[in-house]
Amino acid sequence: MSTPTEQTGPAPTCNTSDMVLIHKVFRQGFRDAPGLVRGVADGDRKRVDVVAPHVLKLAASLHSHHHGEDLLLWDTLEQRAPACALHVGQMRAQHAAVGALLDQVEAAIPVWAATAGADDRDKVASLLDQILATLEEHLGNEERLILPVAATSFTQAEWDKLGEHGRASIPKNEQFIQLGFIVDVLGPEEGQRFIREFLPGPVRLLWAAVGKRQFTNYKRRVYAE
Image (cartoon, rainbow, N blue to C red; front, side):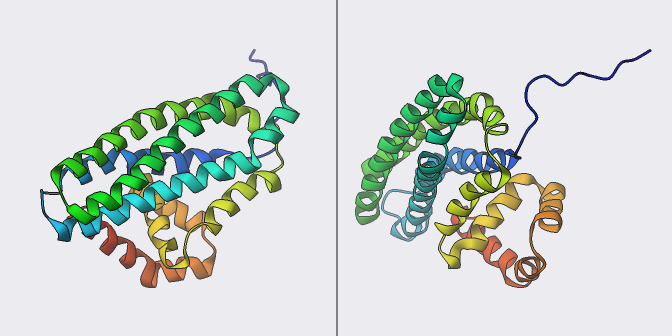
């Protein structure tokens, strides 16, 4: 006769799966970015004017995401789960490493945009390679070491403040583009389920009327599809 599975550890008090989804978007964005930059021919100013702003937006978005965690996550987690302090320290150090690289790429991109030269292009691409390598390690560590502890240390209302912070940092005229990348990384079936289950009715209507087209045009332009 089977017996009920015993639950080990405290029960979750919030759902942290939204963080995993945002991580998927950042992984995809920074995996694509070095190739987008290297795909710009030497002297192609028209293409630089498309790719450079996209990468700057990606860098700014990651900066904002990490700032939200620095502001709303680490101190509280250390206080409520002292055993996690070592892992929190690791996360802070990785944020600093990624932040330093983001600062460098944000300084290098305007130089490349001004010259459209191969050397400046390759410098940007190399920095993006370094960001990707550091970010892949960091996001994996965060999902493995931090999110399970956060799920039992925060209320849902407290956790939701992270998402609110992230959304507040996105300019209104770019919100559908950001939503598009979320839907895109999920794939057709899961993306449609996300739209049905998580978007308020008015947002679904706006997405169908204008947002989806805005995102499709943006992605086609950036990825030269």
